[in-house]
Length: 209
Image (cartoon, rainbow, N blue to C red):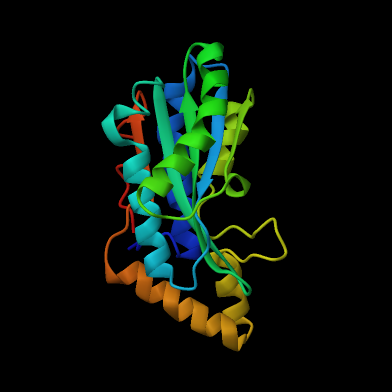
């Protein structure tokens, strides 16, 4: 029986495909999307990094800020690791609106609103870690944001959970410690890795583990 865990090499792909299948039919009325990456400073404590990021998300979304500016949105949270900085918990967002002018306004508003939200929670965030841009390739944006945790990193200085597992399986001692930390983190409690709202509400019913 599938475990449906996001750090499972097999189930991660199934979860990603199921999420894409749930999102795609609802996007036919849109021609553009804003793709936004939000992050805080990295931490060597994964549990603390996750908790801080969730606090920032809650503040960022408070009082219907997203709902009032979009027709629909989707968020996927991921984590990577680097030897120098530790765990980098971050979120990829897709934000939709029928009006391209509203989307362009969002591109300029999103990074600053995230930084202000983080600072309101006494958390560290800078312009360097936030990126918002419009895209006309909705299918590629959806594929990227829903790729899951087990895909290889595009950066040589960071490892995804998938990279860590492959290094552990190859006999890496440091990777073994990191994988043990990840295993403990993902099994200790159920985590909400994805969320959605507006016209995309209900597309994240797959168990977040």
